[in-house]
Image (cartoon, rainbow, N blue to C red; front, side):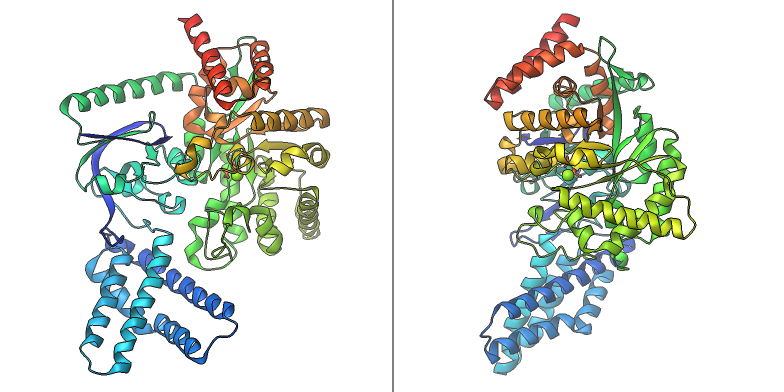
Length: 582
Ligand code: PEP
Ligand code: MG
């Protein structure tokens, strides 16, 4: 039996056999795929070819005194990448072997190398080195964005892997997985967000779980405590079976209170809404008692269909259908749809966001929309056209200055005028900004008069304020939202919203922390949006304190200068409440 500690990324407990996307000694993952997934793997190959070609292009552009020989070499690599024969063999290899494309690329190029190796000609033998280089370049591209798009299991299984892109995780439950365990990742990485949306227990940041677990091993994934147990002893297995039953029972009890609003003891109502990534999540949101959708991460709509290659995301009609279906399903409850936040770790070959040395600080979200106004305006058109079907609010991600907000609002005005000129009914839709860049939190008083609401995105706000990569498990010990800098920024944003009379919500992962909810209430936040699965726990926590006590707690916290003291004070405070109750 082996117990590995990581970061609990999505709650719940699952027990099952592992399907490991292993990395062999040469670091090439290997797993089987079904015939239905051959096309998807082939698209990954095509994408890697495109990216490898871009790499060659950038190398050529960087070498100003490029010698003729170097130029010829780069050109020969480019030709090899473009060779239809290579593409045909990869396609045939996928069909025959039914395994992931990294393996097929290795095998196909190895066969080509072996054929050439036997030839007694220096020129031909040099091509072997070229092929090795091309293989390395393709694999680098494939492995940089590990494609577990196609991995699936016939029996319910736990997926154990080094890393998985959020976009590849979108349909994990439909592909037979009941839980996920990864080497890398953090509490608010987008994989964690997707796992919570799918209600798949997940533990991330396990360092080398993909090496320590073997396919078929019995594995327990405890997303509540961030623990993975491999090959459990009969006693441990029995203990976790019992824990699983208790967890399921508690969930049922909490879900029983879903119709009641969340109220503090003295009657202050805190609206609890759901964060969703796909239109299909609305049912689960309502099932968990969501009083609205506080954040619809619309970029997932774009990422899901990214392989269609139409450029610029889904057509207006497809977006309109998705927005309309969410609005209709939510009835008279508010639905906040965030315009696309593509870039960072949410990449798609459709946009030029692939080759940045620091994508999190780069061409992302509203910046990308300003550079591609046609894409942004298409989304806005679809949103305004869908607006009459419900209670829509539109929100812009990563606003970092008044200038950026002005440009955004100008584009909104253009779209409204165009729609009106076409004879559409153009309703007034509340407009808001995510407050997730420190500059926006500091200048909240300047942004507020131009908007109807703010929604604080603590995931990025913390990442940028404390300079801690939210995806990096090695610095996860620094990713602590209850720290003096964040409390001060939240206080500032709350004050600016109150003074300007604009709405204030919080949709970062902090909203889902029952221990932190009193702090947020005490700071004046009356609307929280979170993964639906977290709503029942947060509602229960709200029912345990009075607003006055929460405000006093915040005053006390703002006097403290160490994160550990703040965390301890919040923990002790919450424990006192529980003890008083029992
Ligand atoms: C945030 O940054 O807190 C947020 C809610 O947005 P996302 O997690 O999608 O970056
Ligand atoms: Mg964000």
